[in-house]
Image (cartoon, rainbow, N blue to C red; front, side):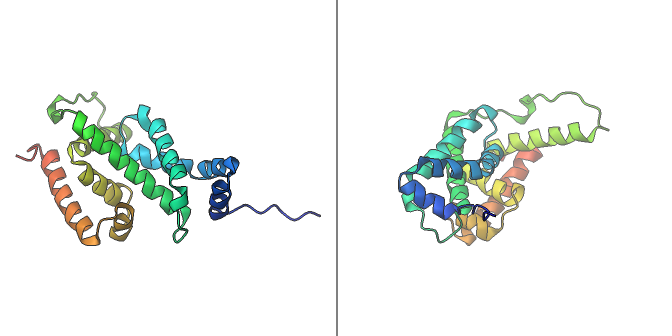
Length: 186
C-alpha cells in the first residue's frame, strides 16, 4: 500500500519556483487565480480588462517572489499585490475617464416586484457612484464595505495606518452619500 501523496505547501512551491521550477509557479497560479480574479472583478468594472489585470498581478508575483518573506501566508501576500495592482489601475483610469453625471446613466425599465433586477440596478448605481470616488476612497470603501475586511486588514493590505484607514473611510462614505444624494459634492 502506498502512502498518499503529500500536497506541497505554498512556501515549498515558492522555494521550488525560486530554484527554477516553472511548474511550481504554475501550481501557485492555479491555487490563487480564483482569489485574484475575485479581487479584480470587485475593483475593475470593465470585465474585458479582468484577464489582463489578473495576468499583471501574477507577473508582479513572479517578479517579486524573491521578496516574499514567509512571515504571513502566501495568499495574503498575493492578495496585497492584487489590491495594489487594482489600485494602480483605478488611478490610471481616473486620470483618463471623464465623469458622467448620474442623470445620464440609462437604466432599463423593470418590474419593481422582481428583486433580482432591482438588485442589479442598485448594484449599477453603486458601481457608478464608486467610479466617481478618488481611487483611494474607492479602495477603502470596497475593502471595508464590499469585502467586509476589518480596519486592521485594510491597514495591512494598503500600508496605511489604522487611523488613516478610519479617516479615509469616513470621508469616502460622506463623499459617496453626496454622490448618491444627487449633490455631486457641491
